[in-house]
Length: 124
Length: 504
Image 1: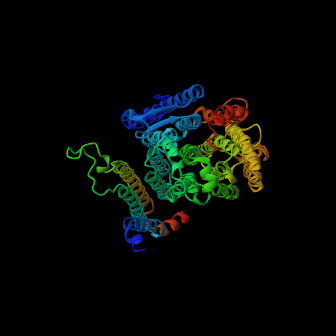
Image 2: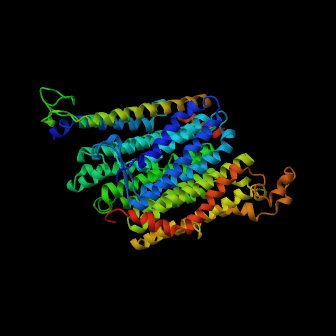
């Protein structure tokens, strides 16, 4: 039981992060706080991928003359990291678009609070 | 057969999208012509691809020369070439039409608008041809980010609607990413064909089931399957009409295509319908969505909002076809992707014409003067509406026909009843518009006639008061519904039946 909890602590912490992100997106009224939740959500998935690439007693995937190419198991798989570089770029682009939309909303309605926003949209 | 044809269309669109801000630095009009050129090129290329695939079999292209399980592979098979042609075809007509309405709706924004439309199409085409799961995610996000922009540049509440779409869409994309993460950990591969071969060797692995659920939920949000549709009505209503005419026919259909691709060609028919029956869940949710969307559409007074709810119902048809998981349902779903793209495109273009002509598109404000003011637009609307209801020989009839046959084949009478009831509801919400336009008293007796003295001379002539660039695309798109309907047997026999998923 303790092994189940402590042996997988990385995955537990990723699940906690995912839930924090979802909570922020669903229950926070402020649009910027929603975006913070969204970013936490994306980052936890990035950590999930990186955690899956962890390998003990292996080194960075750069050719090391001392190890050579005979034993590929001595190198970490670089693929997850490369995928996550792309995912980070996607996440940055998403945040950029989201913040520009938030700025547009603020200019138009002078508020970022969702409840106030709903009332203003109904009255207009 | 290795060939560079699969990569040409996405790369052409991407290159034009990036170069438009530079090309149009002095004259904004250049942006429109460059877009039209790229879009026309993509139509030509994708029709040629359909022909080549039809004659020679699937084409595949390896990026950077790396062989498939390691490198990224683009695949054109009958299914992907067919969907690519449908998407590029409808996009070409919508972009042609946008030349007439875009300047009025989005003054001074034509350069970013056209760059975004091409990025959107590049993402869509990339999602269609890619044979790599992670590459699909990247194109999904390119396509979604462009869609957020296209919706957000609208007036009034558009940024709020787009923001909500962005939050939900990002959750959907992230779920998909998490899902392929599980799949990668289990199989060690991201190539669709390779994963397909590896999966039978890991039977009963709970991580595969988790991956499947996460991918279906993620794509379900992008596709707006019933309980996950919350972003769609506002986004389609408040977007500029030219954007909603582009996003509505293409956006959700691409996600539906991705679901078909991943469920049937990666996980396999047997796994998704027997081992872990997600197709049943999709079918039942879609059936609820069909009824919900149709009833909500009936309750709307604004035409674009009505069309948005009807989109939820139509996505339900595609989902139902996927969920039936038998050959007839599959044919119905794929055929409905094409039909719905053209029907929704035509209807949103009609709504755009109405907004341009009368300044609004409230259904209660429609009257009989429209049949003289916009004779061709209203004729196009009639054809598209008949197709939505499913009256032969329009295209909409045949996809519903295959879906109904699929439901009978499955022995599920509830689904058959849902299809029939929703057709009646469709008839109800379209005939109330047709009634106002065609059956109301002649426009000579209405007050609005005097202020338009030239309205009468439009009767016999081709254009009336309509501008050619607004009228021709609408008419071509809606009358092509008749052609698709008449040729549907050929489309099904030559294209769709050739790529029935293995094991179906």
